[in-house]
Image (tube, rainbow, N blue to C red; front, side):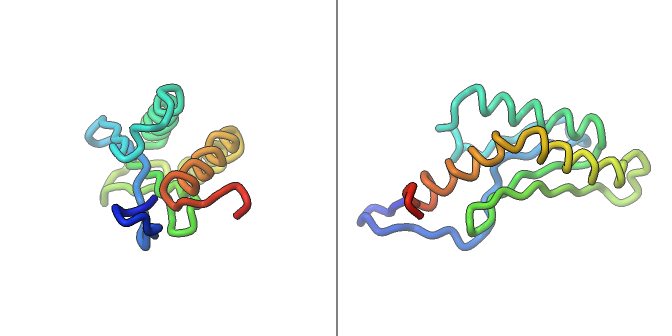
Length: 120
């Protein structure tokens, strides 16, 4: 991404792509990613909501400084329904079954937000 002077803007903190909560029964997609194709946005919503319905807690998908996508989970203290073991297994399942989607999102972020080109 570039500022108004044409200078490359580097993000030095994590950027949230989307999140889902079993507590509030809500899905959030960062408005900065409205440029994603509708099908991708719908896949993200399904992926996140199914995760929180299955495991509980909160799932947040974040881009790190280098453009890698991290899936981060959390749960409220005292939540006896949250499945910690299931959480780890479900994240691994998502990473395996949705690897193409996750890699495409990382590429999109690197090109659109970090201004990288195909040669980098």
